[in-house]
Image (cartoon, rainbow, N blue to C red; front, side, top):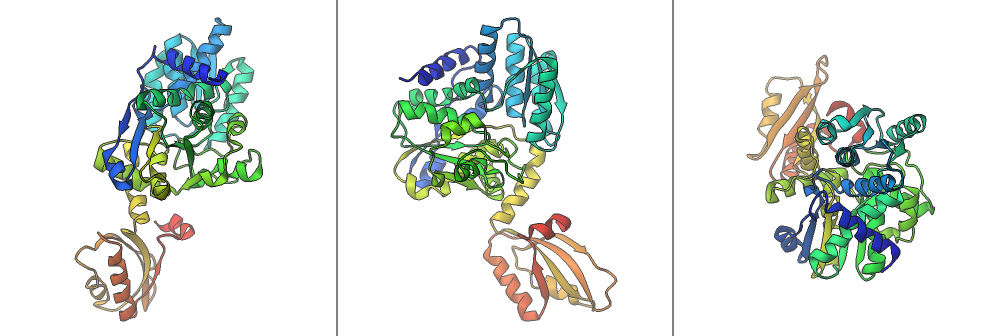
Length: 415
């Protein structure tokens, strides 16, 4: 074994003082769907409902081993690393100041406070993680604290590699493939380095949100680059720039081994796992499962491990998740209808709706027109083909309409 692999096993041993190995569970639902042997490494079942506690523990224990008098730690986190740091800070009896983006779900903020208690202070700064990170690092320098990076730290990477060590023991053999979510790259770098030595024949596929594809951008450029725009929906993996140390471990990855998961499609996976399996996953935690459809031809008949990296889902987000899932699946559409201003025009439109069509929104946008009025309409239905029937009737009757479901510019203002 390599020195890194030994250190990962050492980290795994130390982690046992806080919690047992997270379950590795065969999922019959996904296995049947893809004709493969699908296993879920349930990092969403750790004490803080994500794998981040591993890296935080490993990094903090190493700092304290060298400097036992160290009492101040600082971190920046979209939520999961914050919870891990809070939990570990209380465990070691040290103080941690935790910086979180203003957009962090309230559920993650509240749980961080619960885990850390009096040992922590939370500061909400920045709309995006990178703004939060800059504020945290500036404070850390000023206060002479020790900064605990959420991913770009050798000891954090080493701690996250303990996930792979557990998988190998629990499965009893090397999987044919492991599918990893990617944000800043700490988990993927750690597991990649571990498997490179312990199981070089295991294929690795990486999944990042389409609106935050920082690993793919770095591979195409040959070095980490900052994305000009990041979609923060997948808050646990929406990072504008992959870490320098994590990229060093991932730089030889073929770019076609990195998949981009559309945010709306991730919503369908969250709902599927919740409704069918009763498994609660946050958007980042659903990334590896969401990619299975893209990998269907590659995984048939093989053993595949998906790391479900987090389950800190704020149920106040459920209506948004359902909305985005319906739109992606073609079960909900929004369109602008040019409705004639004459008696019976609305009744004519309503009679075109099928038995499974339901009006979810109806709003006049322009009420002063003499001959026509513009109406925003949202329709939910049970089968995507029902919209073909509805639009066919509208065309035949001469109604003018514009489908704005996938028009991001228009939808941002009116939906």
